[in-house]
Image (cartoon, rainbow, N blue to C red; front, top):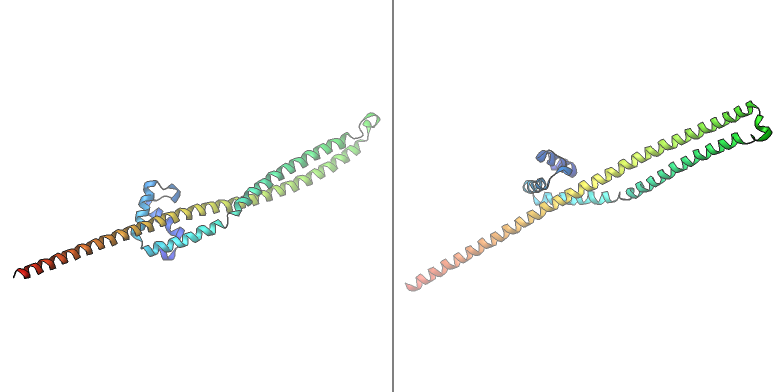
Length: 213
């Protein structure tokens, strides 16, 4: 997989599948250590630094969607409130229906005409069907919006965690590169110092031998 032709997240996902055949969330501590070593060995410091910059941008961009979490929580509250409102509406409707049927049924009026009762029942049925239909439509709309918001928030969480994880991995690779460079530089300085001391000793011995002559 060519790093130049792929997004960084997709590229690193592919590397994990290539090395361990798992997703990044399934990596063990040992596999994380091996992954860092493989990335550090297979990329230059410049490539790693470029990946780190891009991942930092992705993390910051993901943070911009943080308010969706607040919106999600607010929407849950609104949804629960809507359920309560619908329940209250239906409960009040049932109570009004009972009062309407019982109204005027005391004493002499208990013998009211059957057709009036049927008319009341028809009116109540029509009204109930309208309320039920509107409630069902509102409920479905709320569920659709809830599913969309839930998907968006979950996607935000996954991307943020994924990019943050890869950013830490790449930073560890860069840190290892810098440590190795310092060790090589230190080793080079020691070799130069040893070579200089050897040259000085050789020059001193030559100078001493020429003096004896």
